[in-house]
Image 1: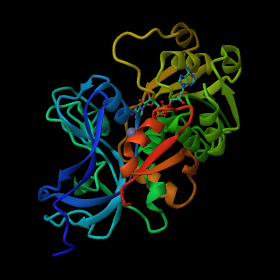
Image 2: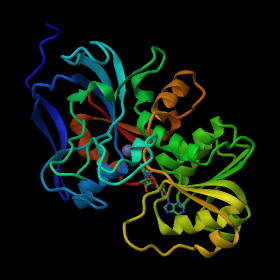
Image 3: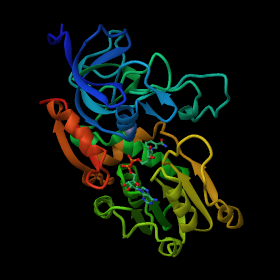
Image 4: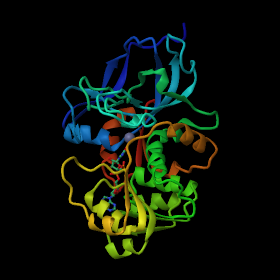
Length: 349
Ligand SMILES: NC(=O)c1ccc[n+]([C@@H]2O[C@H](COP(=O)([O-])OP(=O)(O)OC[C@H]3O[C@@H](n4cnc5c(N)ncnc54)[C@H](O)[C@@H]3O)[C@@H](O)[C@H]2O)c1
Ligand SMILES: [Zn+2]
């Protein structure tokens, strides 16, 4: 039944620090709740780069070879045997999380905080959770989100990082009419600019150390950009809402300085674990609200809707596309944030 699928296909596999390989992996028999998805595009994310460059992403240390990739879209080529999920031929985006209850408490309506949560392409647990930078991937049907007809796969490749940005902006509540500041204009920061714009922020200022990310931020809706970490210029923004998306404590210092009295600072950039020097005194005397932001839940459905109806503009965030044969080159380009925004792998060529 269905099309004859091959028994193996090429994938991007991290073997350890500095050891990234494009190699054939077997296409195993899917579990009853898994569909087989032919992957079309995969976006390279900071965590993929970390596994390649350091053999680890934060606390998640690679103990065995792992297929990378969680920002993926494709087409169902075999429906899950239990009949669940989208049928053959359906283009889909993928929600990479598998929430799992654990011993720690968490709010029921925020499964992104569930302590046992696994994520595609993550070495947080052992055995690791393989990602889906592979021509074919077996994926649980509940992860699959059918794409509306007018949303093409290439644009949809940004659904996962855009959902991260959407969740971050949503943490700040209603931003309509507000002044917003985004510190760090890489893919996540630029997508936060796009989400802020759509949500009606009155003025959006984006900050970065390099020109290229600032160009992208402008293209997706920033009204003004600031290069570098000029504390005075940043403080003058007096933002109601700040999104920290640089992932550096310098950036967090800028975020705190750029927030107006009583303002909100959403921290989506991931800092290394352990103590961080942070310019915190202002946050106390200005009564700032510091809000963490981690991954996302059902925001993915809103993002798909907003991409399909054209209200969320994200295309300028993609700066490069490589076919899988040039996958290693793609990672080299992706690691240089002065030159690239989101780099896509095209699995279909
Ligand atoms: N919380 C989450 O769920 C989540 C999910 C995905 C990514 N992230 C994190 O978000 C952050 C951004 O991701 P990305 O893919 O855009 O990364 P990126 O490295 O491409 O972008 C970071 C940008 O910040 C800029 N920058 C660095 N220091 C700065 C400073 N002091 N002031 C202003 N700009 C500065 C860099 O030039 C770069 O353009 C990373 O820390 C990443 O780990 C968090
Ligand atoms: Zn990602």
